[in-house]
Image 1 (cartoon, helix red, strand yellow):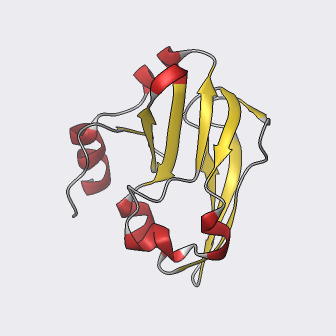
Image 2 (tube, rainbow, N blue to C red):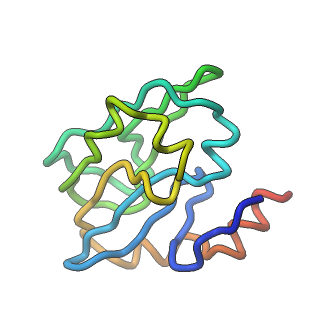
Image 3 (cartoon, one colour):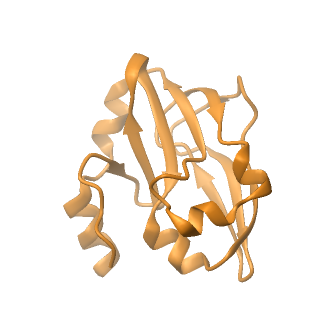
Length: 127
């Protein structure tokens, strides 16, 4: 198991979240998730300006093995997407914690309190 960044929050659905300035939450998938999926071949990102609810499906990643829905860990508005991933989805396989998928301007930062810290996530994937 790779080291889990301690500065991130984690969802049970294997997304990571990083709080940035101005209530913006950067979202990606965990190294565990990309490892389980295998080589990614396609990523469908949400549209800018889209309003999302907590745990609403808003993106899709496809690998040579399967497709997986990606859920927003917070409610808010999509304010950025990592468009480079549409041409190079393998960036997520190369470094899951650098290859973010989208950013949400959170309506309520308390949504982050429902997520796990690195240790709790580590325990959840080892079960």
